[in-house]
Image 1: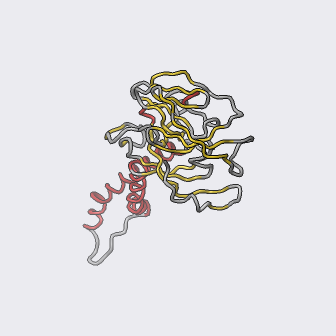
Image 2: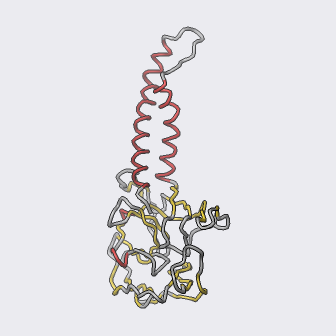
Image 3: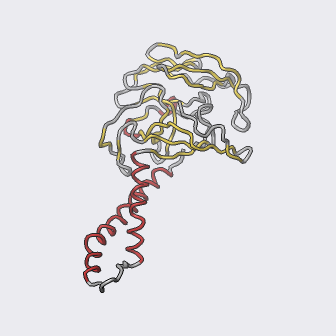
Length: 265
């Protein structure tokens, strides 16, 4: 995912602070002075700049509040989470699922919850925190994780897989025959893809450290994830993906109405 999230959050915060200062200055200092010298029946008219701040500060502040603490939209640009999420899906992310953080420095000031195995989460990529990634949490602190022969093991137990047929999607399927499986991860059932023609990216067993998570894409042979660059620190979490609000089918240049409203699980 892109680095648009971070830049926009900073810009929105600066605009909120800037317009808020002049909104408050006008409301409690400048406006009372203007009103005091108005002729009877005259209407108070601030200058264009103050009028702009008075009009837009509440709107900008509301948008900042909603995006920072309630829900934020993201677009899926890659196929690492196929078949759960497709390229062109537009999703909403629950921003308070894992606690409340300030939108600029990402400092958590309210504890509300922690990711669980099976959650689909957005996080700032540990390699480059200006970029947002979306993956599924497969290991929480203290878990022993291994990946061998295209199979996930959690605490020594093999994640249950059931065949769900051949996967095919125009424009989003890599070459060759791709198989869909239903994986059960701590009671969370979801589909994954396995490409038998790709070599397995095996990971020897290790323990997930405190305050960190192990994340993998559902497209197991087409995902850049914790198997390559390591753990996701708790401080990098952005939120939990929960809803597809729009989906654009670029191959047919149309909206895919069949996916709109789907819950992400």
